[in-house]
Amino acid sequence: MALDLFNRRAREDRERFGERLPPGQKLTDGWPVLHYGGVPSIDMAAWKFSIVGLVEKDVSFGWDEFLALPQTTLRSDIHCVTHWSKFDNDWTGVTFRELMQHVRPKPEAKHVMVHSFGGYTTNVSLAELMDDDVIVAHRHNGEPLAKEHGGPMRLVVPKLYFWKSAKWVRGLVFMDDVKAGFWEMYGYHIHGDPWTEERYS
Image (cartoon, rainbow, N blue to C red; front, side, top):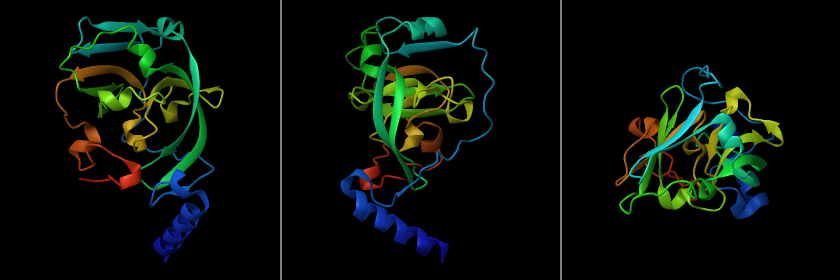
């Protein structure tokens, strides 16, 4: 009965919002907290964001150095694999394209493994990270990103299911081929497109 009600409300939301809402998703006004394990304890004095792997030279930023980079605010919708979507999120941080002004990927670099404090990883193609809506964000709707939502900093890749937008991000490893991250190794789809419902492999 509960599943039937959810499916009916998801269909109604889809009819109301059209292609903006991917199939099988239901709009939420809140922001559910979902992650594996506990919230990691992060020493901000030692915080570092590193870019390594198939790059000409490793790059790293301390917290103040990251905040000194050009800052941007972007608005996007987010879509969780557990069927909820949240519209009109304002993210403030550094766009991925801006990060690429400070690092030179080698020609063979095609994919990126995102690493987080606490050991979480997820894979995203370099081409999709270069979209103009991808941002490494430290603020949400004008407020510092809450710890349970990935603070102090998370990746945001709006065109993919939200597990790809890794919380507590600490670094990127550039790779020549796709490799499975944490949830991908446990059966989540290697790509994760909400509009074609790439939820599980």
